[in-house]
Length: 141
Image (tube, rainbow, N blue to C red; front, side, top):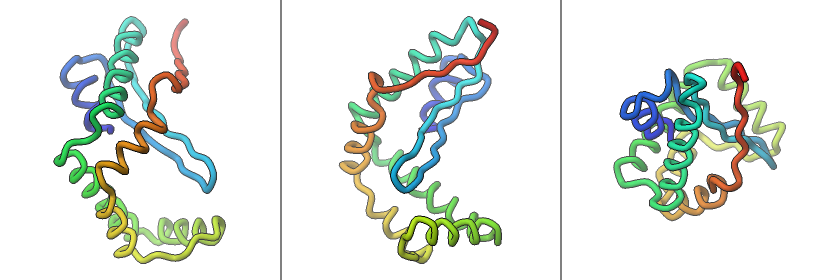
């Protein structure tokens, strides 16, 4: 989602200095967020455009290229993360803490490859409905 947001909010409309999405997942809960660094006078418009993009994601899903790019990026991040001893240990600790089965990198990548458009659409509809979003703003007002 970051690329779509970056292209629309920053590159196309010039509404932000920085825009990206992020997530933090846990066993039974998690958090997904979108950061927009913008001028106070552009904040309302930037928020409206982010909401439009989320509505578009929920309504249209990802196209073939976007889904393939997302899978490639996720798999690339996994491979790069495995080059760090600290990241490997963090991953192993998470497996132990959450009582998850160990999966090899190849198994995880196969699971990523198995994600379908329907999977993405179902999750987007569940988690990215604009009416259920919480907005936090930091600024001079």
